[in-house]
Image 1 (spheres, rainbow, N blue to C red):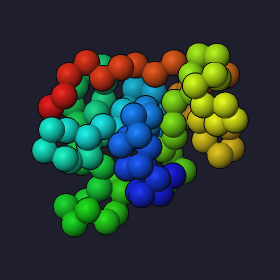
Image 2: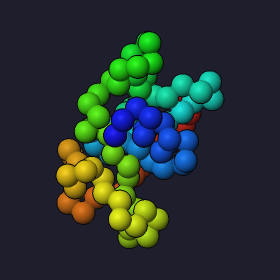
Image 3: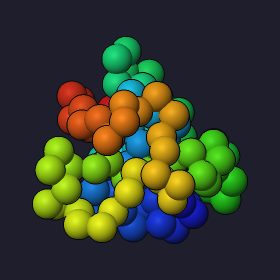
Amino acid sequence: MTLDDIKAAVDAGQTVHWANTSYVVHKDRLGQYLITYVPNGSCIGLTDRGGHRLNGKEVEFFIARSEDGAENPGSQSRPDGQGRGVAPGGAGAFPLGRQI
């Protein structure tokens, strides 16, 4: 996913992950896009300080699949259908417990 794709998906309320479902991309109350490691709450910016270069590779970002596929028909977690650390068939997304 490109930077613009990621931001648009987050703004549309979709759950975007980086690398695996433990990392969730979200927008904080200041309008900053962040990547949070859900198990311990640590986070980094989605991009470098200039806001142009992703902190991760485009192919490593993906939109979470719904449990039954009804919410996003035809969607895949990644263009190749694979997700690092994601169980076959897509693992459910973890809701972000707190906004930082």
